[in-house]
Length: 219
Image 1 (cartoon, rainbow, N blue to C red):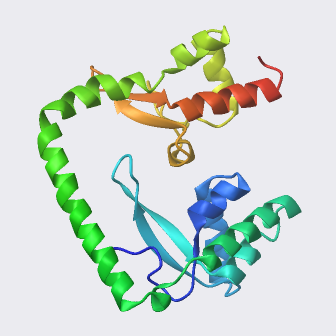
Image 2: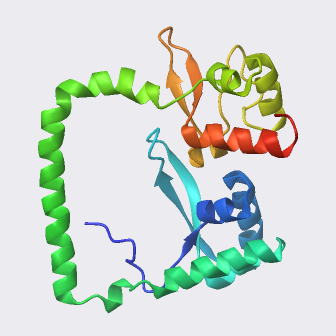
């Protein structure tokens, strides 16, 4: 059983800070590490497992003070959103406030959920391959498909996406997303029938592209 409130004090991850600030997680990690090295902030560096590709990436878990030091250079609007989020975190009960009965109930619910999930997976096993190859792909779009909806060519769209920093540079004969695009749920990397990596946009990614290109007067 895993509880999100296992520590006595709530923390905010560097990934969540990046989302509120509107920058890449790598940028926030760099700032945090510099401040930790200088002894200005304190935080635990740990690893999280990405839900889409199963890879493990570093992140920091910061207390309130360290969080506010990290975001001190950003706008008042950003700091206000961070403070509001911290109020939500501090309003949640921590493990020390949970009664023995509540912990036991959580454990029982977790075990029951595990049993039900395993049963559903066993029944769904014949459908998994179909879902991966057909159903899941229908929820994802290539740059060509997004470009068609915007009334432009894929070449023109990809040029704008390069300017927006969507794709990683230096990859020959293929386009791959930068990690922040995947972390924000804007796109996923899938393997094509020929074995090449293929960047595909989620519906959230399509909406993000439309919003950015509209705000810049492109569409």
